[in-house]
Image: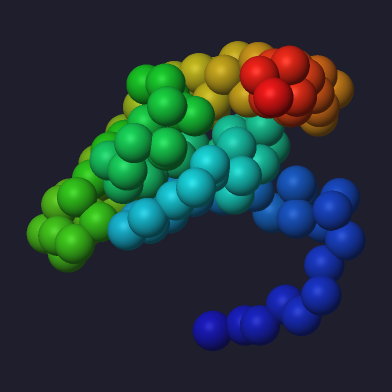
Length: 120
C-alpha cells in the first residue's frame, strides 16, 4: 500500500481518470460528492444502493448492497473483467456529472431560501 499524502485537485482528477474503478460502498450518504467527482474525472463507479447515490449516478454506476462483501467482490470483478462495461460507465458517468455545477447548485439553493422567506 502507498499513502499519497495531500494531493492537489489536478492530481486527484488524474488518479481518478486512470482508475479501473472508483469503489464507494457507502452505508449512508447525504449527496454523493465523491462519486460525482469520480464520474466527472471518468472513473467507472461502483457504489451502494443508497438513495442519494442512486439519484446522483442515475444509472451510471454498478450498484451493490454496501453490507454485502459478496456483492462488492462480484461487482469489482465484473468491472475489472469487462473493458466494455468500464467504457460505458466512464461515458455515462461523464455525461451525468456534466448535469451538475456549482452555479446551478447555488441558484437552486437560493430559490429554496427565497421560498422559505416568502412563507414567513
